[in-house]
Image 1: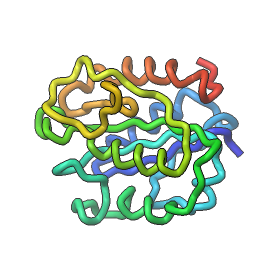
Image 2: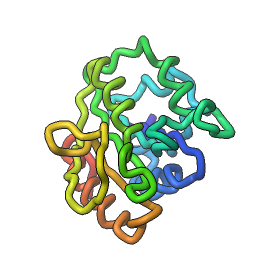
Image 3: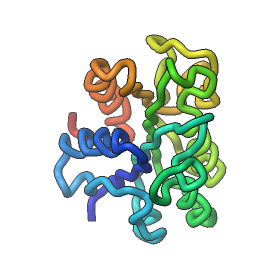
Length: 180
């Protein structure tokens, strides 16, 4: 079994594309194939010591899921399934996609929901990301003046995503044992 689980929720496929970019850099022994949370069993998810979790923010700051008009279940439906999972001893990094121009008042808010959920269950969360370089009004995903994970805006700053992703992977590498 791979050392790192890579899971995402998605509606348009952008979060999936980022997961694939992450996976492309690592072999199957180190990192598992990226999986949409709507196709994951709880025991499989919980079996990883290291997790990278990705989510877009939809509409008014929502997690992807049926109530936010996604065609399929996503994080909204998956989080209740893992409510009883103990994340103590697990290391988690989060990445999120958002639209800072179209939704400046709830920019990447869904990341905060995943962050709080995982943190409350004992996980060590790594990969905080600076807020500089983005133009938005408010985000729930800021703790101690940093985003709780990597933030990508594929709508307005897609040209910066590769560099941001590389920098972030280098940042979390020591925590995950990643050979970069």
